[in-house]
Length: 229
Image (cartoon, rainbow, N blue to C red; front, side, top):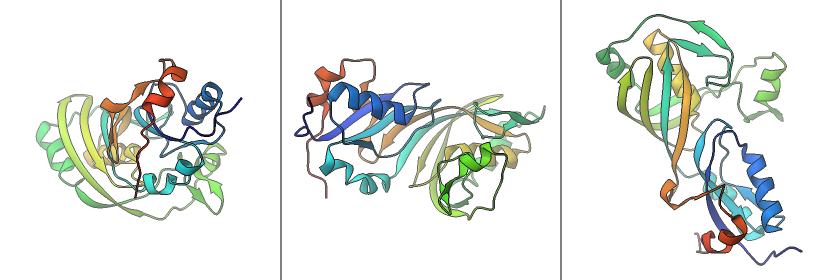
């Protein structure tokens, strides 16, 4: 039996190793609500805020939520590059260069404000109807258009080979690409080791419920039934 009268926003703290699609599937199974979407995917290795949209009235607002800025906590691993720009990929480059703190700070100063970013091949972005990651898995690389993004980068800590950063990003920013580009600028290589979404638009991690909780109990209470312009 379904209850399509339940509509709203459910904020979930996505755990590591869970895909965005499987999270939607679990919620549909637990809530018996067919119309469930989300306002932005997270890679399986990433954790943090997932804005789940429950019911037809809210899934129709997905584009509105996708346009909002986001905030991330990212751990970069220096000294190597991978084909996916993150920990899940195959290493394609190794370096024993250890950048100084001053070198790192000088490079990070270039990753502020308006940037032109080329979407990574291992991404869900579509080009001529094809998702880039489908082409990448087939061993193909195609030309991609650079996209203008807004980035604010804050250095939290540095202990080689790890760099902990906080990013505030506009819509469509790939943190994996930021990690890769920072590594190239340092001439040591880098990939994204860990990623946590701290905020998506007005919704923060502190408001989220854990996926291991009883969703049937929390579904109604956690839905943020509030109007959105």
